[in-house]
View 1 (tube, rainbow, N blue to C red):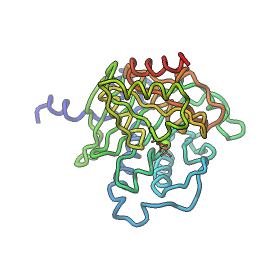
View 2 (view 1 turned 120 degrees about the vertical axis):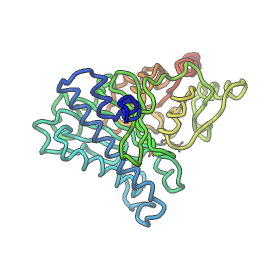
View 3 (view 1 turned 90 degrees about the horizontal axis):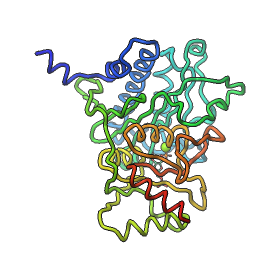
Length: 334
Ligand code: AHM
Ligand code: MG
């Protein structure tokens, strides 16, 4: 095989991370190893999802309730455990915090050396699993800075600017991993015959404006007047098209590719919206900013928001620069 075709076809994820940091510094080595572990979790989850309908024990509820009081699906539990087990032997990550766990999970064996925390939503949009539609995983890596005296993750209550890496895995027709370590946004496709994520697109840029409008309009009755005004604006102008799948990762991926805006505003029932800051909105905000887009809670830059608890929620307005600004202008005017 000529050398150039190997170069073109086989940029693997771990190599890509090292290339971007252009050094063999300890941090580059660590991030490369961590991304490789996340990719392994993605492969294991994708494999399980591909058989979801065939295995009686994959679909349905476990009968338990998670921290947010929602029914826990079997796939959520499986995916949550997959991330824990791939990081157990890594030596790199000392702690994991996820949507499915009340408190952070410590890996004591790693704690003297592991300087990183993984924040993740193992299966985002899990109600889609039962009807054979796309779901995703969301992740972020943070350097462990303070001491977690009570083991409740209080040292994680920081803004999102300190994220070292963030991204998502989209389990769609193909499995795709999109990530950033602060040097642009890059996507990889899982080649099942190789069992490797292969570079698909480098330096993804989100269009400054796009046609996609993605929100759950069933909540219109409980939105603020400003969000309703924006919605009415969309209804009355040419050039918008609505897309909403019930799984954030897929909806954001579409916007990253085609441009537009995703909104999950506060509602009467949930004034801070539904989505969680540390492992849903902040990682996606980091990624979209890296692609040249914008993310806020409607007024404040999302990466500046400091959560008051591990599972804190935040409203989300995210996507193309112009479209997010337009939504914000409606909020400002009210
Ligand atoms: P989940 O992590 O419990 O699956 O919830 C998050 C999901 C997002 O993927 C999606 O955008 C949103 O919830 C949909 O919520 P709704 O049904 O209220 O529109
Ligand atoms: Mg989620």
